[in-house]
Length: 290
Image (tube, rainbow, N blue to C red; front, side, top):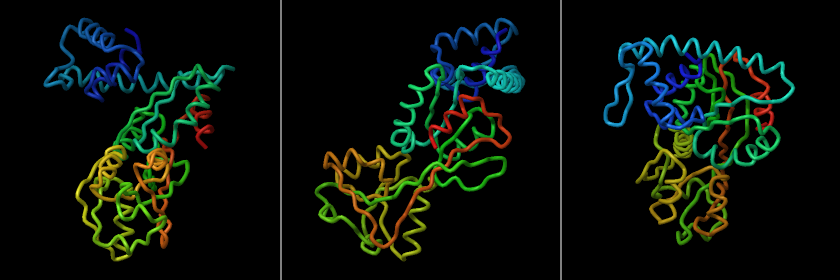
């Protein structure tokens, strides 16, 4: 039995998806299926159940998952420590982040990193901040990048950068002729926002409440791409991180206005589990980000 097979099985149980487990291990879905069948043949019992496109472990599969997760973690720690003796930087980096960071903050650092360290595999997945924190704690990912990281038990935070939040509107909106706007001028405006549990939305609401401004949220989404598309058609205005709308402003599908009476910034942090041993690949990756 290969240790890599146990890791694939753990990823399948945690993601509930053959495609996601395949992507995380840089193999095909058929290879994931084949490895699961080999485990079921070895233990002579079913280990997973397929229901409505989702994957759930059987009682025997849950037991195998719990033991395999510990084995995989120990093996990964050993492998990472052994890599530190080599002169060539290789290995892998597992990273999770939110869409607005991954799509607009990481493209240039990743290009430089891949050029400098071609033997390192970087796997990036997109998720909500709460899920990213859980996966950092569990050790399933090496690093997480979130907005408004704050302090949490067993989590260390490396400051990454800060993004200014700006108001965006459609090119034909009355605000589009302006370059700045006060928070007070947002009173009664139709807003398109992040969902309420997303940190950037909470920061926006705190600002509006502090200024005594009431807006009308008409749509709420969990990602920046949908927010931009809805604002472009004139459904409302939105407060978003400035790096995420540079292309739309250049193409003149969106207009951007800075807040004149309040500079609002979104801090980003790189998360890792306290006490986690960094491989040379992870250390170099963090250095490239910083």
